Image 1 (cartoon, rainbow, N blue to C red):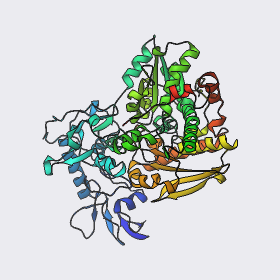
Image 2 (cartoon, rainbow, N blue to C red):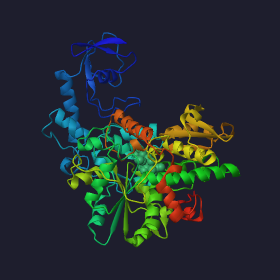
Image 3 (cartoon, rainbow, N blue to C red):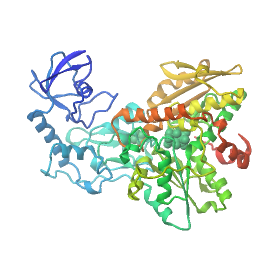
Image 4 (cartoon, protein in one colour):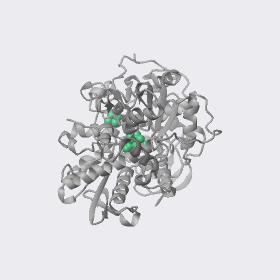
Length: 568
Ligand code: HC0
Ligand code: SF4
């Protein structure tokens, strides 16, 4: 540790940290529009400047390392004036339709204008002719609102290794564009939405599907059904003034019914069904010695990534549909019969932390008998908006349960919401099938493969299984060689595109604080810890679905309704 002086106060800082990190560690906030945790700083926005004794120029705190005895001023008149000038210049080049902007209320540029008391426009130096890109089912891009912070360029390149965006031209002509100037839907974008999460303004937002959902709710001829993804209930309590650590599953069911949904289901139950089917698929592949390792296919951004970068490995993807699609298909083809509704009169809404799920639901592979499994996908943020729109008081509402037959889940189904959760759920399922016992921690050996990929192995009646877990797509390029090497004997690879898994999906409430993402994951782990049904094999709801409809795991019916085929 070293000692530095900040605003005439002596504080401790870690050697090697940037000034910005040291300030944050000590609870001192300076603004930034370009900085992102874990990525190398660029100093592009210059808002984090501070005054350091001995230096003539202001220093960008994100890119300078602390030194013993440094004397720093974070809010001197000179610093504040510099920041205000930057924000004024940004606003001179920015449309001022804030009232109608999707990001109104959560825009970092707007917040800075308030903080620095920018109260008039100096000059309007640009006409905003760039065209709005509405081509993608997941993301809306409004280049006029781009402030060149570069966060999208970097997250897409350095974390996802997709590189959809790049800086084009130089100097005052510079702008962020897509490779070959393609509209997003025709670019290499996989729809993960990580760029939307980090965009400080309204330049990147999600494609909204709320309007069609409200139309369906208002239509008396239509039966509306909602499913909620495993990670939703642990992500939104703070949006309604409750403790961020609260799991509000039961409150969400009650709210959805108040809004007017006729039936509400838990996607985690479909995750349990997918555990049954994927476990069987893996055992079959292993027995036949074909298409090993099996690659998970529940993350649609990852599936698209495989299609684009590893087309000759598509055969390795699990053919079992994602839980979202399984639930959609079962609602349409099984549940509809049990309640005597014409399947085409059902409007099936899925509430997901993910923007790629909007794309997945529209895929041709995701239809059964000419009907889409899922009609509309809304994000966690859209759910929050919907609940507020209907004026529901989330703090004063009785919790409710999901509807039968998709009401009881195992905690393994809930685990799907975090990176490694699906692998764990399938491992528990396989172990139970082979040994009729539950897989407990002491039977699991944690491992690392090659360049540090998380993996684990377990033995069941003499058979060895080894699973690898990857999140953040950059990592998959680095380890795919290792994972595919036969001598590493990997049977299954779980890949989630978003760092940390669905808890950090592109549709989740905005936060630049990685602690909140960790907290969401922690709540899911605690739910699992406390739950009585920890394995999908013990889920009575799932048993009933097999007895009444699917007949058996891997049956003809399962194949017809729950499986698909991706092709290059
Ligand atoms: Fe996920 Fe899913 S776990 S992808 O992250 O598998 O979106 O939460 O709903 O489908 O179950 C997202 C979350 C899901 C699906 C499930 C899987
Ligand atoms: Fe890149 Fe994902 Fe954004 Fe597409 S959605 S541009 S892949 S970060």
